[in-house]
Image 1: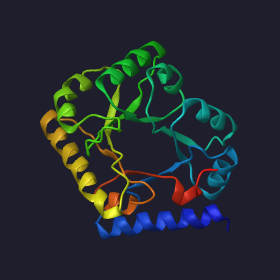
Image 2: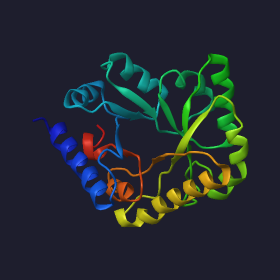
Image 3: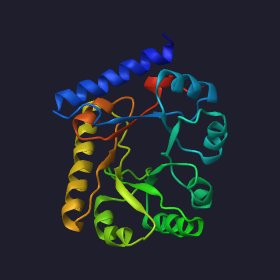
Length: 226
Protein backbone atom coordinates (compact mmCIF):
# COMPACT_ATOMS: atom_id res chain seq x y z
CA UNK A 1 0.00 0.00 0.00
CA UNK A 2 1.39 3.42 -0.96
CA UNK A 3 1.83 6.32 1.44
CA UNK A 4 -1.11 8.06 -0.24
CA UNK A 5 -3.31 5.00 0.18
CA UNK A 6 -2.46 4.86 3.88
CA UNK A 7 -3.45 8.50 4.38
CA UNK A 8 -6.50 8.19 2.13
CA UNK A 9 -7.75 5.17 4.05
CA UNK A 10 -7.30 7.03 7.34
CA UNK A 11 -9.17 10.12 6.13
CA UNK A 12 -12.03 8.06 4.74
CA UNK A 13 -12.24 6.17 8.02
CA UNK A 14 -12.40 9.49 9.86
CA UNK A 15 -15.25 10.66 7.64
CA UNK A 16 -17.12 7.38 8.16
CA UNK A 17 -16.65 7.58 11.93
CA UNK A 18 -17.97 11.16 12.00
CA UNK A 19 -20.98 10.14 9.91
CA UNK A 20 -21.70 7.34 12.37
CA UNK A 21 -21.30 9.54 15.45
CA UNK A 22 -23.74 12.11 14.09
CA UNK A 23 -26.31 9.60 12.86
CA UNK A 24 -25.73 10.36 9.20
CA UNK A 25 -25.78 7.64 6.56
CA UNK A 26 -22.54 6.29 5.09
CA UNK A 27 -21.46 8.37 2.12
CA UNK A 28 -23.26 11.51 3.29
CA UNK A 29 -20.01 13.49 2.98
CA UNK A 30 -17.83 13.32 -0.13
CA UNK A 31 -14.08 13.78 -0.01
CA UNK A 32 -12.57 16.49 -2.22
CA UNK A 33 -8.83 15.86 -2.48
CA UNK A 34 -7.23 19.31 -2.58
CA UNK A 35 -4.54 18.79 -5.18
CA UNK A 36 -3.56 22.43 -5.70
CA UNK A 37 0.20 22.80 -5.51
CA UNK A 38 0.80 19.08 -6.05
CA UNK A 39 2.13 17.57 -9.28
CA UNK A 40 0.17 15.48 -11.79
CA UNK A 41 1.95 12.38 -10.50
CA UNK A 42 0.24 12.84 -7.13
CA UNK A 43 -3.15 12.94 -8.82
CA UNK A 44 -2.35 9.80 -10.80
CA UNK A 45 -1.43 8.02 -7.56
CA UNK A 46 -4.66 9.20 -5.96
CA UNK A 47 -6.79 8.03 -8.89
CA UNK A 48 -5.06 4.66 -8.79
CA UNK A 49 -6.06 4.37 -5.13
CA UNK A 50 -9.68 5.16 -5.94
CA UNK A 51 -9.96 8.92 -5.28
CA UNK A 52 -11.61 10.67 -8.22
CA UNK A 53 -12.75 14.11 -6.98
CA UNK A 54 -10.12 16.86 -6.80
CA UNK A 55 -10.09 20.53 -5.81
CA UNK A 56 -8.00 23.14 -7.58
CA UNK A 57 -7.74 26.90 -7.06
CA UNK A 58 -5.75 28.12 -10.08
CA UNK A 59 -7.26 27.72 -13.52
CA UNK A 60 -4.00 27.46 -15.46
CA UNK A 61 -2.48 24.94 -13.05
CA UNK A 62 -5.65 22.88 -13.16
CA UNK A 63 -5.79 22.90 -16.94
CA UNK A 64 -2.32 21.31 -17.15
CA UNK A 65 -3.24 18.62 -14.63
CA UNK A 66 -6.53 17.87 -16.35
CA UNK A 67 -4.76 17.31 -19.65
CA UNK A 68 -2.63 14.60 -18.04
CA UNK A 69 -5.15 13.04 -15.65
CA UNK A 70 -7.24 9.94 -16.06
CA UNK A 71 -10.71 10.44 -17.45
CA UNK A 72 -12.04 9.19 -14.12
CA UNK A 73 -10.94 12.42 -12.41
CA UNK A 74 -13.56 15.04 -11.53
CA UNK A 75 -12.78 18.64 -10.64
CA UNK A 76 -14.10 21.34 -8.34
CA UNK A 77 -12.83 24.92 -8.35
CA UNK A 78 -12.28 25.91 -4.71
CA UNK A 79 -10.26 29.15 -4.81
CA UNK A 80 -11.08 32.80 -5.39
CA UNK A 81 -12.31 33.02 -8.99
CA UNK A 82 -11.05 36.16 -10.68
CA UNK A 83 -13.46 37.69 -13.17
CA UNK A 84 -10.93 37.44 -15.99
CA UNK A 85 -10.72 33.65 -15.43
CA UNK A 86 -14.44 32.90 -15.51
CA UNK A 87 -14.55 32.09 -19.23
CA UNK A 88 -11.65 29.65 -18.87
CA UNK A 89 -12.95 28.03 -15.68
CA UNK A 90 -16.55 27.26 -16.55
CA UNK A 91 -15.92 24.51 -19.12
CA UNK A 92 -13.33 22.80 -16.90
CA UNK A 93 -15.02 22.29 -13.53
CA UNK A 94 -18.15 20.39 -12.61
CA UNK A 95 -18.72 22.66 -9.59
CA UNK A 96 -17.50 26.16 -8.74
CA UNK A 97 -17.47 26.10 -4.93
CA UNK A 98 -16.41 29.69 -4.36
CA UNK A 99 -18.78 32.25 -5.89
CA UNK A 100 -18.21 34.97 -3.33
CA UNK A 101 -20.21 38.01 -4.48
CA UNK A 102 -23.28 39.00 -6.44
CA UNK A 103 -21.03 40.77 -8.94
CA UNK A 104 -19.07 37.57 -9.61
CA UNK A 105 -22.29 35.55 -9.84
CA UNK A 106 -23.57 37.95 -12.49
CA UNK A 107 -20.33 37.58 -14.46
CA UNK A 108 -20.55 33.78 -14.24
CA UNK A 109 -24.18 33.88 -15.39
CA UNK A 110 -23.36 36.17 -18.34
CA UNK A 111 -20.41 34.09 -19.53
CA UNK A 112 -22.39 30.88 -19.04
CA UNK A 113 -25.09 32.22 -21.34
CA UNK A 114 -22.49 33.07 -23.98
CA UNK A 115 -20.98 29.57 -23.73
CA UNK A 116 -24.30 27.74 -23.52
CA UNK A 117 -23.50 26.32 -20.07
CA UNK A 118 -25.47 25.91 -16.84
CA UNK A 119 -22.75 25.98 -14.17
CA UNK A 120 -23.28 24.36 -10.81
CA UNK A 121 -22.09 26.66 -8.02
CA UNK A 122 -21.84 27.10 -4.28
CA UNK A 123 -21.99 30.47 -2.57
CA UNK A 124 -19.00 31.21 -0.35
CA UNK A 125 -19.93 32.66 3.04
CA UNK A 126 -17.45 34.43 5.30
CA UNK A 127 -19.10 33.21 8.49
CA UNK A 128 -16.34 34.50 10.79
CA UNK A 129 -16.30 37.99 9.28
CA UNK A 130 -12.57 37.88 8.58
CA UNK A 131 -11.33 40.94 6.69
CA UNK A 132 -8.77 38.83 4.84
CA UNK A 133 -11.33 36.36 3.46
CA UNK A 134 -13.62 36.53 0.45
CA UNK A 135 -17.30 35.68 0.68
CA UNK A 136 -20.75 36.96 1.46
CA UNK A 137 -21.50 37.94 5.01
CA UNK A 138 -24.58 36.08 6.24
CA UNK A 139 -26.60 39.32 6.25
CA UNK A 140 -25.48 40.27 2.74
CA UNK A 141 -26.37 36.83 1.44
CA UNK A 142 -29.87 37.13 2.86
CA UNK A 143 -30.26 40.54 1.20
CA UNK A 144 -28.93 39.37 -2.16
CA UNK A 145 -30.35 35.85 -2.31
CA UNK A 146 -33.36 36.85 -4.36
CA UNK A 147 -31.12 38.49 -6.97
CA UNK A 148 -28.85 35.45 -7.00
CA UNK A 149 -31.74 33.05 -7.52
CA UNK A 150 -32.99 35.21 -10.40
CA UNK A 151 -29.82 34.58 -12.43
CA UNK A 152 -31.13 32.16 -15.04
CA UNK A 153 -28.05 30.12 -15.92
CA UNK A 154 -26.80 29.33 -12.42
CA UNK A 155 -27.56 26.12 -10.56
CA UNK A 156 -27.06 27.21 -6.94
CA UNK A 157 -26.58 24.00 -4.98
CA UNK A 158 -25.53 25.19 -1.54
CA UNK A 159 -22.98 27.04 0.56
CA UNK A 160 -19.25 26.89 1.27
CA UNK A 161 -17.07 28.38 4.00
CA UNK A 162 -13.42 28.60 5.05
CA UNK A 163 -13.30 29.36 8.79
CA UNK A 164 -10.25 30.67 10.64
CA UNK A 165 -7.36 28.21 11.11
CA UNK A 166 -8.68 25.85 13.71
CA UNK A 167 -8.32 23.92 16.67
CA UNK A 168 -10.95 21.55 15.32
CA UNK A 169 -13.58 22.27 17.97
CA UNK A 170 -13.16 26.01 17.40
CA UNK A 171 -14.56 25.48 13.90
CA UNK A 172 -17.72 23.77 15.10
CA UNK A 173 -19.64 26.97 15.72
CA UNK A 174 -18.78 28.26 12.23
CA UNK A 175 -19.91 25.02 10.64
CA UNK A 176 -23.12 25.07 12.65
CA UNK A 177 -23.68 28.69 11.63
CA UNK A 178 -23.33 27.80 7.95
CA UNK A 179 -25.77 24.91 8.31
CA UNK A 180 -28.27 27.11 10.15
CA UNK A 181 -27.93 29.84 7.52
CA UNK A 182 -28.56 27.27 4.77
CA UNK A 183 -31.65 26.01 6.59
CA UNK A 184 -32.98 29.55 7.01
CA UNK A 185 -32.42 30.39 3.33
CA UNK A 186 -34.20 27.22 2.26
CA UNK A 187 -37.23 28.17 4.35
CA UNK A 188 -37.29 31.85 3.42
CA UNK A 189 -36.77 31.41 -0.32
CA UNK A 190 -38.41 27.99 -0.79
CA UNK A 191 -35.27 26.65 -2.43
CA UNK A 192 -33.18 23.52 -2.02
CA UNK A 193 -29.54 24.07 -1.04
CA UNK A 194 -28.39 20.55 -0.23
CA UNK A 195 -24.61 21.04 -0.46
CA UNK A 196 -22.44 22.28 2.41
CA UNK A 197 -18.72 22.42 1.62
CA UNK A 198 -16.83 22.90 4.86
CA UNK A 199 -13.98 21.29 6.74
CA UNK A 200 -10.32 20.79 5.84
CA UNK A 201 -7.45 18.63 7.07
CA UNK A 202 -7.59 19.87 10.66
CA UNK A 203 -11.34 19.83 11.22
CA UNK A 204 -13.07 17.70 8.60
CA UNK A 205 -14.52 15.24 11.14
CA UNK A 206 -16.18 18.09 13.05
CA UNK A 207 -17.50 19.45 9.74
CA UNK A 208 -19.07 16.09 8.91
CA UNK A 209 -20.67 15.97 12.34
CA UNK A 210 -22.18 19.40 11.63
CA UNK A 211 -23.61 18.45 8.23
CA UNK A 212 -20.87 18.84 5.60
CA UNK A 213 -21.62 17.13 2.31
CA UNK A 214 -18.18 18.02 0.90
CA UNK A 215 -14.91 18.16 2.86
CA UNK A 216 -11.82 19.66 1.23
CA UNK A 217 -8.73 17.79 2.45
CA UNK A 218 -5.23 18.43 1.15
CA UNK A 219 -2.35 18.10 3.61
CA UNK A 220 -3.81 15.04 5.37
CA UNK A 221 -3.84 13.28 2.00
CA UNK A 222 -0.87 14.60 0.04
CA UNK A 223 1.40 15.92 2.79
CA UNK A 224 2.88 19.40 2.62
CA UNK A 225 3.32 21.10 -0.74
CA UNK A 226 6.79 20.88 -2.20
